[in-house]
Image (cartoon, rainbow, N blue to C red; front, side, top):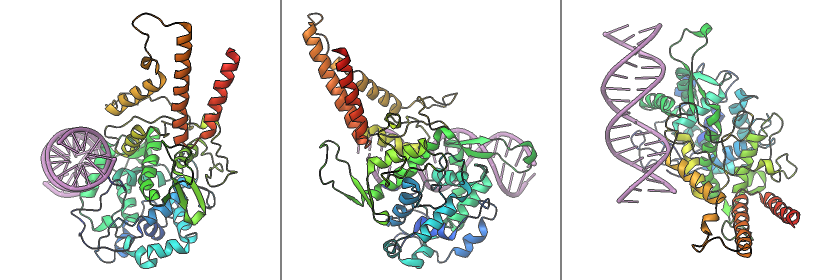
Length: 425
DNA sequence: TTTACCATAAACACGC
DNA sequence: GGCGTGTTTATGGTAA
C-alpha cells in the first residue's frame, strides 16, 4: 500500500510519463460544488464538459490532500469550514449535504496564497478534474453515500456522484462500475438496504454506510492523508520519550502545530463530540476537545478486517504501532466492545487474534514473572514483583497514552496508582 | 519473501 | 433478450 492508499497512480488507464500539476480533490470539489440534494441527480453533465485533455496525472503532489483533508476533515475546526461541518459529518446528522460544498467553499475561499501557488493555480485545478482520484473505491463510495441527504444511495447514484466529482471516470473504462459494485458487495462497510415500498420503482437496492464501520472509513481517510502530513513533519525540539517521539505537523495554512498522534485523538474526539456545534479544534487550546478526560482515551483498535478494505489501513497501522486508534464506535460515539455483526461474516482475522494477544500481554504481564519452580515466592518477593509489574504496566500505559498524545491521562493513571498505594498503606 | 490491500476483469444469477 | 444490479472468483500490482 502506498502512502496514498487506494487507487494507485495507474497503470492501464493512465498514460505513464505524463506529468502535470495536480490539484486533485481541491479542483474536483471546487468545480463540483454540490448543491444540496443534487448529489447524484445530474451527474454526467459536468463531467464531460470539464474533461479537457485526456492527460493523466501523477499522484505525487499531495498538497491538495494536505490542504483539504487536514483542514476540513481531520482538523475540522470551525474556522476551517464555516458551515460547521467537517468534510463529512461523522455522525451524519448535521448538514451532511453541505459537507462537500462546504469543503469546496472552504478550500476556495480560505486557501492560502502558498497553497494556490503550490497547486499551480487554476490550470492545475482544471487539469485535476481528469485526475484519477487518490481514494479507494470504498472511500469514494463512502463519500457519495455520506453526501446523500438520506445517507443511502442506489448504485446508479453512486456512479453519478463519482462521475460528477471525479470526471476521470467519465473517460475511464467502464470497468470502474464493476469495481464499485464489487466494492459494495464485498466491503462490509456498506450495507444494502431495501428501497422503501413507495420507491420500489428503480432497480436495485439502496446502499448505505454501516455505522459500525463508519469510523473505519473515516480512519481510512485519515490514514490516507497522514503520509502527506509526514512530509510536513519536523523533528520535535525535545522529544519527551525516546521510544516514541511525537512528530509534529505544521499546518501552514492554519498556523497550527499539533502532533500527529493528537490528530488521532482529535479524530476520535470528533467522533465522540460530534454533536452539532461541538466540533473540536485541536489547534485551539480552548477547544472542547479535552484530552485530559479519561473517558476520551481510546486505546484500542478495531480488528475488523477481512474484506473490509477501508478499515484495513487502520488495522495494520494500529496493530503495528500499538498507538491509540479508533475503537468501534456506536452511533452515540461510545466505545463499543469489539463486537461483530451478527453472523460474523468471517470477521475473525489474524489481526484480531494478534490484538487479543497483545491486549492479553499488556493486561497480563504476570507470566513474565512466573512463580519459581520451588513454590510460591515469599511476600517480599511477590511485593517486589508486583511493584515491577505495576511499573511495567504504567510504562506500557504511559507509552500508549503518550502515543495518543494524551499525557494528562498518564498523569491521571499515575495519580490513580499513587492514590491506590496510599489507600493500600 | 511474505502478507495484505486494492483494482480490475470476468462469469454468473436475478429481476425489470 | 437486453440491461442493470448484485455476488463471487481470480489475478496482478503495490507497499509494508
